[in-house]
Image (cartoon, rainbow, N blue to C red; front, side, top):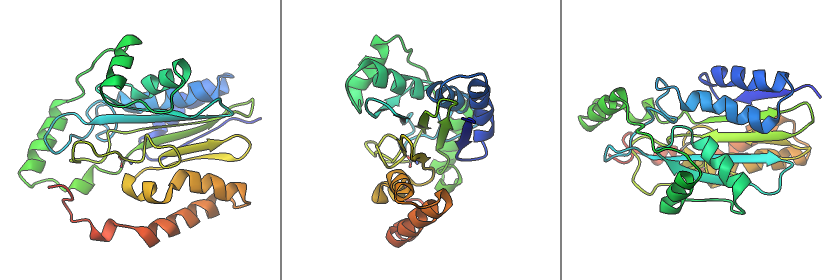
Length: 250
Ligand code: GLY
């Protein structure tokens, strides 16, 4: 089978390149998806994922949610994580080393340390200065809030994997959970059907179980583009975007 890689946005090109190198040399979809999004997570010039990602409203580093879904796979598992440069790799470890779907909070932190991951300071000077400008009312939240990376990979054996990683909505309230670590919202994959992932305001994908919806529509015969169109139609129907103030949590 001809491998395929697709990701969500312009910064995904470097991720696609890394994933493609793995796929084209016979690597697995899982390795390709991880290898791809790690590039974006480690790039400090990307302000919404991993190193240098957006702050919460109080200025400290946000939770770093990441999720996985291989298909076929034993389960689907996710891990929201903080202060690890490559949360997607921690999420993969959760998938491979535990029977759980989701780890959060101190338990997630302790798990990562127990697996040899190092605590990393993700707050770059640039991200700190952006936060200061936001505090002074000089930065529009929407400038940097919408760039989760999701990457779907299909390998030559016909296995699918989707990885999703973000620093989450900028200036969010502590405790806010977005779509990225939630099964069927930020990412979903089903063997022999397809995979989908979401970027943008997580609340919208959460409200319609957006990634699950796209794959489920494909299962029911929709072409991928039509499935995405229908998901967008439902999001628009239920959108809270118009009711969000320009500085939603300011
Ligand atoms: N889509 C990422 C988030 O809203 O947290």
